[in-house]
Image (cartoon, rainbow, N blue to C red; front, side):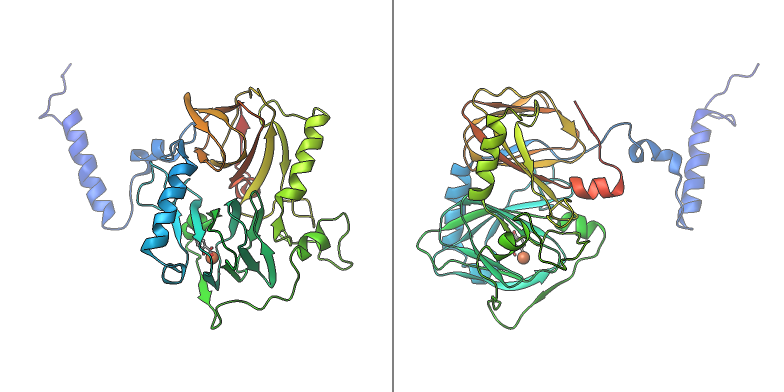
Amino acid sequence: MAVATATQPGSKHNVQVARQAYYDKISKFHMAPLWEVLKDLVTPEPKTDCRPALWKFSDVKRLMLEAGDVISAEEAERRVLVLENPGETGNARITHSLFAGIQLILPGEIADVHQHVSSAIRFVLEGEGAYTAVEGEKTMMSHGDFIITANWAPHDHGNPGKQPVMWLDVLDMPTVNHFQASFASHFDEKMQKTNHADGDSFDRYASGVLPDGAPAHLNRSPVINYPYAKMRPILERLKKTGDIDKRHGARVRYANPINGGPVLPTMGAHLALLPKGFKGEPYRSTDGTIFAVAEGGGTTIIDGKPFEWGVNDVFVVPPWKRYFHNAAAESVLFSISDRPAQEALGIWREGN
Ligand code: GTQ
Ligand code: FE2
């Protein structure tokens, strides 16, 4: 029986050469062999460049205030420092699908009205006296408020107060850009005309009644601001009655009052109270999740590594990385992810 050598037909070397020649030939016809890349395309478990990371508010605040000296809100259009995932350097994203940043608006500044396909949420960290105006409703911003700006909603921000105001922005820009479907436009005026009082959309839609004739279907919430002052007592009720999830604590999901669905089709958010001494059970899900600390202090173990957090810190858990929370003090965690988008596409999974 003949033994294959490098010079004989059918040898390993010849097979490689013949295959490469074939790949070169088909590439001229814009075709490529799936079998060379199949293992990277259909992985048995989620594959991600996203890494666990945490941003300390003490660093964020100091560096953010320095940005106030370097550029005005007007020049910047939005004075935002991107929270860039260390595994996605240069890509302006905190997870593969979501952008996050910290925005600063100084007393007397305005961030002009504009609109874009990307939806945004704000979670207010520090300072009082700034507002955001969304679709004709002006709402004052306070610590812990959750504000949504849906797809194509005109929005501008301003600070007629005396303190610098900072908040967390999360936008679905990487998702929109994945589909290459981005549009944006500016208005001639700096501020939109507001024709609704502060709190109007919450009182109108989130009080157990709906305006008669409200649409039966709406893929985003009509509520502009879910104020912390209204949400926090609900967490207290859940805690008192022992409605505490072993993984997530006493948690509410921000809902669209029209249909109970997520606030936005691309992003969904929760607010959770972790009682003092809470030791959470492990959890993982396919939606990489961004957390912001509204109250308290504790540690979250992500993929085996401890991340210690305090008020206004932001941290990120990559898709399908196992994590669990430990609360040293009674704590409140805001979280946001692309879960609604994954659920709509039928690809979301969770586990322990
Ligand atoms: O406040 O309108 O962080 O358009 C990124 C893009 C904030 C905003 C960001 C934006 C905004
Ligand atoms: Fe914007």
